[in-house]
Image (cartoon, rainbow, N blue to C red; front, side, top):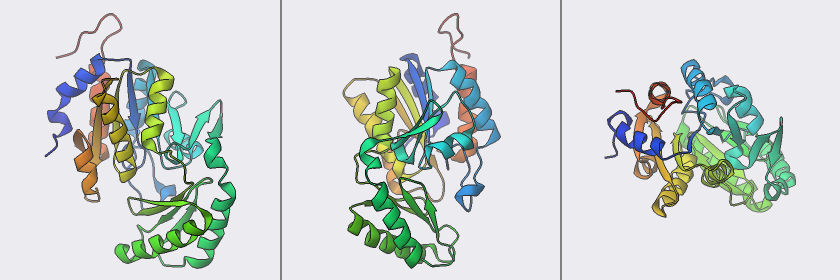
Length: 276
């Protein structure tokens, strides 16, 4: 059994002491409660407040989302946070979205896949989301989620194969992406390199976050830095999320509590002392 985050805070302090320290978070399900549909989701006000403070204190506070980078930035609403969208394919830089060049070459196949999905997927409670360089099929609002999942997977695989795209899954969602080696793990490692980070904490709630957990574990194993991965769990959490994490937190409320703790525990500017 992985430890509960608030029984494991000594390990967090050990990571923080070995900076420069970076805090990296997923958005939906981590700092924003899961909503029936993506457009209804909102970042928890307490999480936003603490991230605002932390983004002024730390060398890096970043949000890596499955949403488009522009949408993740709009949703979180903090200019001092670094944003990567579409699982790392996009990055918000200098007031614009920069898309990975290799992935950008698949815009036409993604458009074709979207048109085919729109023509074939017509199930109650199943929604197609156009995210520019990726597509998502949401089935959270379907009457029978398992049946809807099978329908979504079959449709996604049918259109993806013909266009040379790949299919992945998340919480109540099937995704179609360009076949490039980019995920939240590669996104985390890029941020660590770009910002000269020596230690990092990552919080995430879904299968796509497991890629980040694994990347940080490899980074730690070779002695390149210190890290701690925190799974934000719920009744929907996949088993693999528990296996790959270092500790777990219970939902967005625990994340808000942790961010508040982190602000209070952060060393003062005049020395590395810690509050008792």
